[in-house]
Image 1 (cartoon, helix red, strand yellow):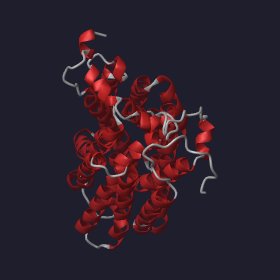
Image 2 (image 1 turned 180 degrees about the vertical axis):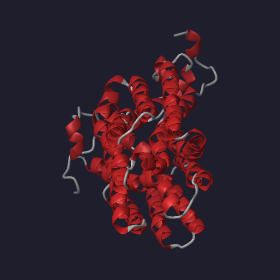
Image 3 (image 1 turned 120 degrees about the horizontal axis):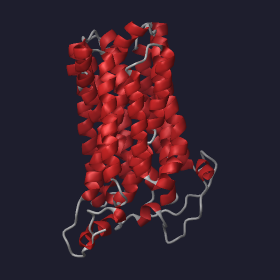
Length: 441
């Protein structure tokens, strides 16, 4: 490492924000690759003769794999780091997406969705671990928003991109193009990502800034040494179960937009491929703006002296309550009014996105557990990603409409808000290792 990069007194570099943006590009690509099937499914189902119930199973199978592998991958990230885990994961999910272009039956499609889930399970724990390594506590909401809006950007890009490719060359070509994106990104991530102290372009001023308030968040708190907490002991902590329940509720609503939303617009609201590509992107664009604004506002309020607990939990509670408007979209006869309500719902939900990304570092007993807790939190969230599409598909197949499915999503959003108020404990400014207690005491 060249000594010039660590010269004291030099103007502070900002490599950490470049890392956050690069991570966000990866997040965008994960969402493009997982969501390509949501846009293509109405057309794939015609070629492969897939019923609505089986469509739900195909969509949900990805999230089952994603959820299962999050647990070991979270531990793996803590042991070997974000660089290799995220980079190799991108290669795996890229290959799975490319191969989907060749499927001719449901069995192969399900198997590749499972492989896609394995590869993409590396994204969330890797990004949260990287945020804890690269950013001081007071910047983590902004950093989380920077990379997490990649999910919304990916959603916005997916609709017009994939719809356009399908109209031009068919759904098989769409999978070839989106899968190639992952392989290109993997090369860039493996080449660029290092820990701050090992990165050639980070100077001493930025290293000092990164370390300026990280101890209170992830190492020792109130001057006490953090004991060695085993992975299984994380499940004895009330905060762990609160994060799991909350993210389950959050993702149940979020993944309606990722999986069934395009089909809802086409089948329930009569959107054509052209109108789907144009108007279907509106909720995602709005969600990008709300999440990014939320992240920077949270950090601004904390810098001004607001308590971390009030800010982090307050934003997600308000966001989830407003997102329950998804239920009202079921009862309006106007497609335009339904789209407005769904746009508000998705945008409000993502107000809590930056909070979710900071919670593992806030509640982990040490920096050695951040990836593990992130994996546990996202495991629960993606159980909703697995069950939600199946439940929605079953409801649509049984009732012939989306009314009950949307009302259920609204109720789950309210339950999530109550969880963050009641079950998730207070985020203390300087808290020692949380005592092991009965789950809901």
